[in-house]
Amino acid sequence: MDCLFFRHGIAVERDTWTGEERRRPLTHKGRARTRQSGKGLLALRLTPTHILSSPLTRARQTAVILQALLEEPIAIRMTAALEPEADPQAICALLNTVPPDAFVWCIGHEPHLSATAGLLLTGTSCHGFALKKAGACLIHVDHRMRPGTGRLDWWLTASQLRALA
Image (cartoon, rainbow, N blue to C red):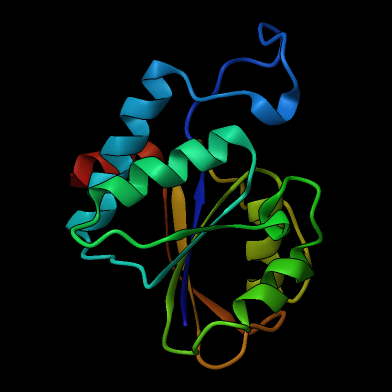
């Protein structure tokens, strides 16, 4: 299985947002840069079989932008396993419910995505692999998603993805 972890794009700053945190949206710049990062993914010929997203507004908006770039749209599945406070083991369990030859795009938040990547790569939930906004990493697992069984194929910032577009 290949699993792409993609951090949501630039969102409205916390200190200027007056609404509920879960509803904090992407900025105009965030939407544009996310679209360009998505085009970089397509330049790498990375077409998902599944798209999973945190239900928080900024992640959901990111997932919709990426979905719109695909030739054949794939349904987006919202999951609490990708919320910022979720246990990284929860996404591993969810990924084990899809076929082992799947290519899954997971759209979420920091530090959750880096903690999950660390868990898959090293066997320990660690935060040393921070993803930039609209950045991504690709992890391959030969069989079932289990801690320490992942292989990092690449880790790219948003500017690197945009340069590929």
